[in-house]
Image 1 (cartoon, one colour):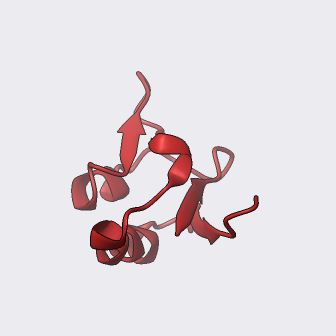
Image 2 (cartoon, one colour):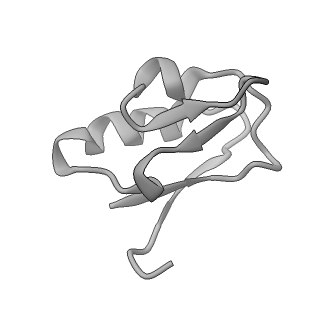
Length: 67
């Protein structure tokens, strides 16, 4: 599984980071990006889905492995 944060949609609420800090990092303005090129280990997939569901802007998505 891979995830991606749409930087144009992200508003810096940081819910993703609170719910899955292992999968996201924040820049100096509080905007999120996915760590490790968005790769999600199987043990963190539930946390990734929770972060996706809780993003108010729907800025996080699951992407195919070849994207």
